[in-house]
Amino acid sequence: MHRGLKPLLAVASLGLVAGCAAPSEPQVTFYSHGNSVTVDPAQYCDATGQNCAKPPENPVGQLRIPGREPLQISVPGEVAAAPWQVAFIYRGINGDELDGRSAVFPPNERFAYTLNLPPDGARLEHVEVQQFSAVLSPSADGGVDFGIGGSWILDVQQ
Image (cartoon, rainbow, N blue to C red; front, side):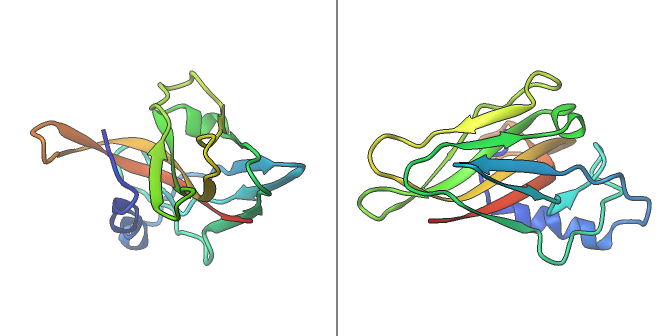
């Protein structure tokens, strides 16, 4: 499975050169401590990685999450219809930047996820909902990586 956040930029650029027959653009809702934000996809292509929607001018949502409050994420059926996961970056108590990810959720199994950080005083900084496509590429370990067909990005404000 895909293991990093960095390939987002390479895959997102596909949306800029793809054809005009773009799929509809589902939105993801992020909620914490009484506030929510609905985010358009930074990238959204059909299952084959083709027919990508034009990304919005500012594809990154922002949400204030005070202290160690959990972040709830709600995805619509169009996102949950394919395997998806949540990747995130947080800052540990010692200031180190760390990353993590949820399990990969099988199609139509989950429509929501609650992100809780480790109990050591870590602060959430960046979250990305990643929907996998059917596009496969060889991985460095001899297996295969699935491409990211859709992504919804949130930057966290403290």
